[in-house]
Picture 1 (cartoon, helix red, strand yellow):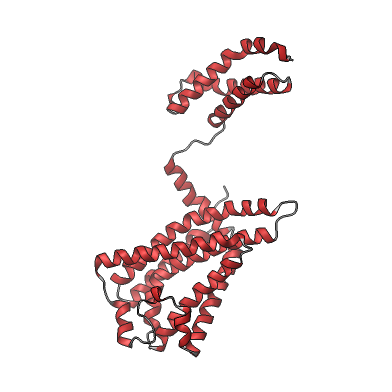
Picture 2: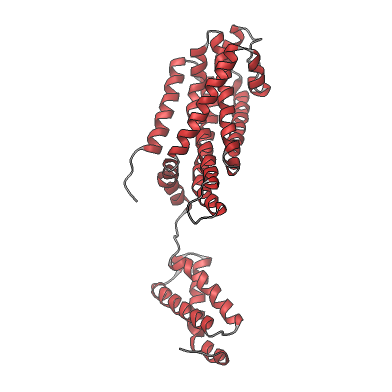
Length: 330
C-alpha cells in the first residue's frame, strides 16, 4: 500500500485493530509469561508482528506522522523479544554459563594465560633469588600486612607454628574474608588495568609472583620449604590460577588496544575483547571464593602436609579438566 502523508488517518483505521491486538498479546506476556497466552494468541503473534513491521516500513517510507512511527517502533521492539528473544530461567542461564560460556572463554585465552603464567613464574624466581642473595629484600618485597610476623626476625619454631597453628573458627572466618577481599582486588586490578596496553597487568603479575618467591625463600632458609609448599599448595592452585586468568583477561584487552584487527578501531577492538574477558572474570569470582575457603579454613584445619598437597593437586586437576577437556561442538 502506497500511503501518502495525508492518508495517515485512513492508514491507521485499516490496521489499528491488528496493532491493538498485538499490543494486548505482548502486554499479557509481559505481565505474566508466554504460557499465559492462549493457543490462538500464540499462533497469531508472529503474523501480527510481521504485519506491524510492514506497517512500520510503510510509515517510514511515506513519511507518515512521527507519533505513529514512534508507536510502531515501540510495539515492534516489544514484540520482537517474544517472537525471537531467548526466554530461559535464571537457573538455566547459570548452567549454560558454567557448562559452556565460562570454559569456552577461558580456552579462548590460552595464549594470554600462558603469558600470565610466565610473568608470574618470572616474579617467583626473581623474588626467591633476591631474598636468597640478600634477606633485606624480604621487607622490601613483602607487605607487612601480608607477612603477619613471618620474616627473618622470626625463629624457626615461630614460623613452623604459623603453618600448623589453629586460630579458632572466628579467626578463620575473618582470615578467609580478608584474603578473599585482597585476592579479589588484585584480580580486578589485573583485569581493569589491561586497557593501558597491558603494562600494569604485567607488572602486577610479576609483583604478585615476587611476594610468593620471597616467602618461599624465607621458609626455605629455615628448612621449612616443603612444609611451606603444602601450606600454599592447598589453596594456591586455585588462587593463583584465578589471578593468572584475571591477568590473561587484562592482557587480551591490552593486546586488542595495541593491535586491533584490520578495519577495526582500537575502542571497538577493546570492547570486543572486553566482552569475552568479562565472561572469564565472572567465573574468576567463584574461583577466588573457593580459594578463600581453602585458605581460611582448609589449610588451618588440615595439618597433614601430604593431605594439603593432595587437596591442592586435586583442585588443580579439577580446574584443568573443567577448562580444557574436549567438548562437543555447540
